[in-house]
Length: 188
Image (cartoon, rainbow, N blue to C red; front, side, top):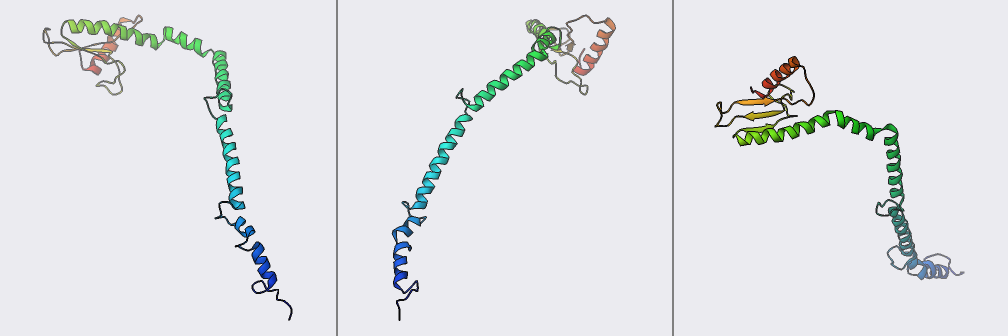
């Protein structure tokens, strides 16, 4: 009988097993559990390359580096919005509104309240800046200041409300608004 070529019993089988089998150098190099095997080496190299590329990508998202893509995008957007605001005249319109709009009125009310509160403290009254707060009337904010008269007054505990205007108002309109403010602040 000729030599056996069967993998498990023959010489060729043993030769193949010794050269490429799991116990061979080649087989051990393909073993994923082997830290020095080819798969582990490839895996380590791929991981190294991915981390390097990831670091490069992350650098482009940094706002600490003026040369990064994100910093350049931020600068470009800021410049574009600045040009757009200038083209639309937003800054000028905001400044103009502040000159004649409600912002000026709010500053006027605050300045006047400081004087009102100082006078109230001097005579023992309790004062409150209630502008912007709803009162007793549903959704009404009428009445900017509220003073509760102190014990040294002729009417202790009486509440007085003040509605502030920094522009001329017709007498009838002023009376109507003060009536609404008195109801809203439950005051005189």
